[in-house]
Amino acid sequence: MGTLDWVVLILTQLLIVGYGLWKSQGSKNMQAYLLGNREMTWFTIGLSIMATQASAITFLSAPGLGYDDGMRFVQFYFGLPLAMVIISAVIVPIYRRLNVYTAYEYLEKRFDLRTRAFAAFLFLLQRGLAAGFTIFAPSLILSALLGWNIYWTNFFTGLVVIIYTVSGGTKAVSQTQKVQMVIILLGMVVAGYMVVNGLPKEVSFNDALHLAGKMGKLNVVDFEVDLTTKYNFWSGIIGGFFLALSYFGTDQSQVQRYLGGQSAAQSRLGLLFNGMIKIPMQFAILFIGAMMFVFYMFQAPPISFKRNLVENTRNSAYKQEFKALEQAYDKNSADKKAYALAMVKARKEKNYDAEQAAVAGLRASEKKAKEIKGKANAVMVKADNTADTRDINYIFISYVMKYLPLGLVGLLVSVIISASMSSTASELNALASTTVIDIYKRMIKPEASDQHYLRMSKVLTIGWGLYAIVLSMFANRLGALIEAVNLIGSLVYGTILGIFLVAFFLKKVGSKEVFIAAVFSELLVIYCHTSQYINAFFAAKGVDVGWFFPNINIPFLWYNVIGCLPLIFVAWLLHQSKFFKK
Image 1 (cartoon, one colour):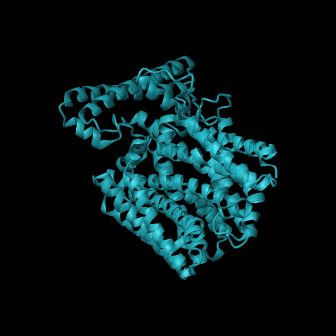
Image 2 (spheres, rainbow, N blue to C red):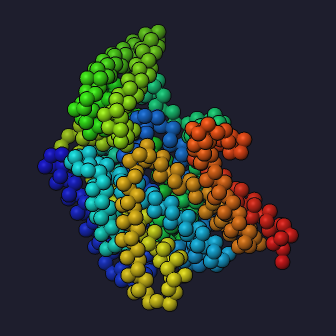
Image 3 (tube, helix red, strand yellow):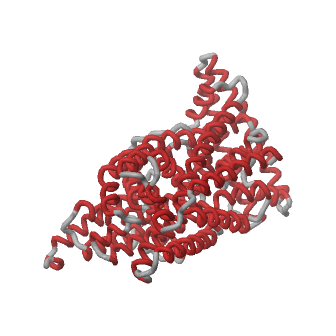
C-alpha cells in the first residue's frame, strides 16, 4: 500500500472509533453498557443488525465464492425476509414486555433454569467459535499486505477489538456500526465499478454478463428439488428461513441489537429494514465475484492467490516442476482470453455457430485450468507439507492489492477491517452479556451490585476476546469462511429455535419434555454432520459400519430444520405420554 492508502485507512478507522466512543459517553451502568439505555432508533438498529451479520468474512469470502462457485449462495438468504416479519410480529413484543437483557432469560420464565442454561450454553459455544473467524478475516488481510506471521496478526487484531469493545459497550458498537456500514457500502460500490471498468474496451457490460452466464457464474436461482444440493431455492427458502429465524430471533448477538431500541416499533422497523436490504446487498457482493471471474479471463490470474505459497514453492526443490505448471497455466490463460474475445466478437456479429464454438473452448480451458491448478497445489504441498492450498478467501483482496489505484486500496482494506471490528465487537458484547446475565448473575453471584456486574461484563469481554483469538489460530484450514461460519451456527441454531418455538406456541409443554427433546435434537444434528466422518474413519481401518452408522450427506442449511422440527414433535409427544402426566 502507498502512503495515500495508509492515510485513508488510518483516518477512516480513527473516525469510526472516535464517533462510536463519543456517542457512547455515559455508559456507566448495566443497562447503558449492555442495552445502550434503550435509546436506539430503527435506522441505527437496522444498520447495526446488518453490520453484525456482514462481518469481514462477507467481504473477503463472498466475492471469492462468487468467483469460484457463482452466485447460487444468494439463495441462502431467501428465507430471511419472512423470518424478519415473524420475529417482528411475535418475538419482539414478548422480549419488550418482559424487559429482558438476554433472550435466554425468557426461557427460565417459561420453563426452568436448566433449559435457560442449556440454550445459553449452545449460544456461547457456537458464537465463541464464530468470533474466532471474524478475528481471523482481517488478520488474513494484514498478513497478506505486510508479510506478517498470521498468528501474531490474529493476536494483535483481536487485542485491538477487545480494547474497542470493552471501552464502549453496546451503544458504542451500534453507533459505530452506522458509520462502518456507510463506508462498507461505499467501498463495495467502488470495487464493483472498478472490476467492470477494468475490462477491455471492446468488452461491454452486457458482454461481461453473457460471459459470466455462459460459464455458470450467474446461477442465482435453482428450483431443482435435491436435498444433496448445497444451495437451491428450497434449501434457502426453508433451511434459510429456519436459520434466519433462529439467528435473528434467539442469537444474543442480534437480539441485543434490537433490545436497545426506543420502542417495539423502532425494533420492528430495524428488523424489516434489514430484511429488505440483505438480499440485494449479498447479491451485489457475489456479483462482484462473478465479474472478477470475467475480469480474469482477460488478465491472467495467478496459479494460486496465496502469494506466500507460490513464492515458497518457487524457491524450493520443486521449483522446476512448479515453473512448468505455471507456464502451462499462463498458456491456458492466453487461450481462455482468445476464446473470450472470440465469443464477444461472434456475439456482436450474431454468428451463433462461432459463439458456441468459443463457449466450448472457454469451458474446456476452464476445466484444464482447474486440472493444472490441482497439480500445482499438490506441488506446493510437497514443498511444504503444512500448506493449505485453498485460496478462495484470498481472491478478492489479491485483486484489490494488484489492480486498484492508490487511495482505493486503503478504502477497501478499511472496509474489511471495519466490518470485522463491528461484527466481532457485537459478538464479544453478546458473549459477555449472556455469560454475566444467564450464568454469573443467575447461578454464581446473584446479589451483587450493578457496578460489580458492569465490571464483570468488561472482564468477561476480555476473556471471550482472548478465547476468540486462540480459535482464530485454527481458522485458516476451513475453506470458504462464509460457509464455515454458517455451518457452525447451523449445528445449534435449529435446536435453540425449537426450544423457543415450543415456549411461544405450545403453552402446555413443560420443562422436562422440552429439555429431553432438545438434547435428542442436538444429538441428531451432530450425528447428521459427523456420520460421513465416522464412516470414513472406520473405512480407513477396513471396518464397514454403514449398517449401524448410515452415511447421511445433507447440506448444512437443512440442519436448522432437522434441529427444530423433531424437537417440537418429540416435546409434544412426551407431553402427551403418560410418563409426564401429573
